[in-house]
Length: 500
Image (cartoon, rainbow, N blue to C red; front, side):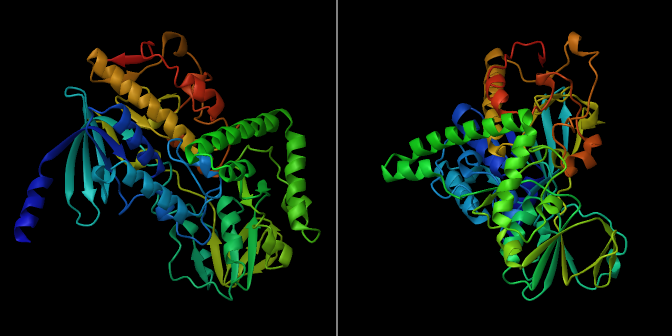
């Protein structure tokens, strides 16, 4: 044991080099590693993951009922068939990811419990120098890489976002955030108040309603929901015909993408009609007891925020049965017995769940610098939402809000692998993106157009994000259907790319 400990200490003083370092072993990191291993066979790589295992969101989120809010035919990878119901629990998604890791021998490339503290680009050596900390021992490790592939996601896993309401310390019950749900939390027979009405609330409410005394969902304003059957008739029919699962996956994936494109088109061109259809679908599931006009008729147009799919209408069942109720109001303050609303009403609760969203985490909250100068991403302009002006040899995977995250993971993976192979072919070790002369005087705008998409976790911390220009190549368009053509067509001889 003593010899092993000494060897560990010795290794910690050495710098380990890899051609590519992938940060994060969630759905982005695993998918990116698969592509890198297939398309860049000469590149050495490692995946550094801060958690003790793989899975990212699907590992760290443990609240009751957690599941995907988009279908696994498009949220899953194009290269590995999904063979179960389209909407899946976290457990089934983790099993799916484990299959990808095992089938492609990725486990030997993953270092768990490695939290990156800092990353500095050295232009003289054309390398990123990383300092990582072992989360189990506190040991500091040094890594170097020619290319940094950021797949750590966009929010902090340690804790979620909870507003600071007046009087929170006065509440006599328990306050929890779904992102840090206690394993021993007993809500049976308790009055539970869920603050928020997004995708988390949509899965949590039906999961706890049968055991709780009553669940109240408190929202500032109504949200759109998309009820439907958790099955795909075409997939079922093809399976009955004993069609190969790879073919089924590809066919159903393409069908669902076409349906999604049509939904988004209609939401833009016929917002009032689409809103009416979505609200009528909700009304059908709720029955006549709930005031749909007050509680389920949003003030924004469809798909201006992400819409949660409700499999088999399960979210609405507790409201219909009287096990849950919805209140639309603002919080004035917390009181010992619950919360007091601006209307003066007091909602009694034993447990308050703050399903109030994420804390935006920009590039993993790592301290980045370029040749010793601290990097402020907000001083850069984004190239297709994945590279940044003046930041060498780095790509950040940031997925879609209206479509499945993984669709963009694969688009960016194809881009990175092409870029790495191109750089090898021309004998260059460093690449940055720069504004062209015709771009220099364009107005620099916030990263996301709030008229197009405006979730709270982005609008709260937009000042931390890169800028965009009003040109497709200089923004994250959120449009998979244009990007699936535009990104594969990127020409690496474009003057946007600067090599050395």
